[in-house]
Length: 460
Image (cartoon, rainbow, N blue to C red; front, side, top):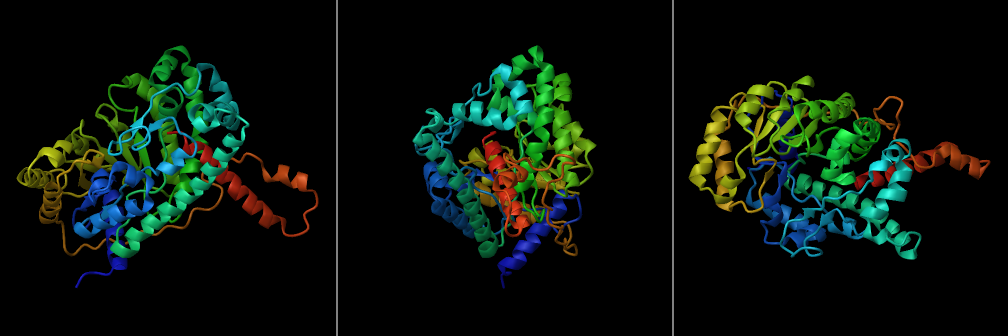
């Protein structure tokens, strides 16, 4: 008799948690983890339909879960188009809007922050966002102060809240109906990536490293508290799931070793340390080839981080270099999912199970994702081979890890979650409060913190 969804959910989540913690498990996980792009389109929908119609998005996940019931975890879909449509977001080209309906979305490189605006970003991030950056990246704000721009603010705020509710419903559908946990919840980019991706652009940041290195360092340092607090605001308050970190510019050859050690790693290390101290684990996508730099992951406590190894890097070497500290995911080249045969897939999975996976702490997966154009028969072979060759012990049953919920206020000493208008200012405007001031303050600050997180939502 098949296990009930609640039992499956707890078993799978416990297995996932133990794997990340480098603890013994009964078997290797069957990954629909990371970003399962294949699951987005397996049901036959276009990229536009998945991105804009939440019902089709959920239907695609449900079909995938039904057709591949052995998977332990699932995340499909990353972008809800209406959220970006509401403001005319210029950093993405979206299928069905700027691109053909069945084309992957694209990131638009650009200089969205000027070289002389570092001090404003550091000293007054709200002013920088509202007065400089948002009017540049939001097409709907081109006529500042117009009814259309005010309406865009209203729509985007409503969409932000609605998106959170839809994501919650989507996660509950997988949990309650299919017993499937999420691979991550909440997100945070590296401070340097914020500058290099969505603010200065690659050309701008490379010039800054030589012409204004002190400003780059100061800006990265200044971003840490807000990025950490906003990540926790979106994370699982029960700390069951890792916080997602897509790391873009830390790979070879974007930065020299000296540049990496000066600009990229110190602020990222501080931010991750704060999240770990707050009780969270991390899932970091090491996009590109991190081989020259991944030894730094040994600086963290054992069993707190899962690193996805991209196709350009070698998971065997990653296991040798950092496998004693962090959990690893990857090992299956994208080309094997898309162009290989089931026999080739079985051979590759068997090889990895007998080498890097033999002592646990490894999740077989594609390079940071299961690619869109995966052949179903190859994915089936991937599942079957993992179940056949990835067994450890029938006597081991991982226990679900439970942690206290995150208290309000965030983990950064001296840096509570930022608000735009503090309650003290509002209270002085109200004058005498006739009832329970604490109730008013709590709701005021909650919405203020959420509004500030909305500002940082557009960082990437």
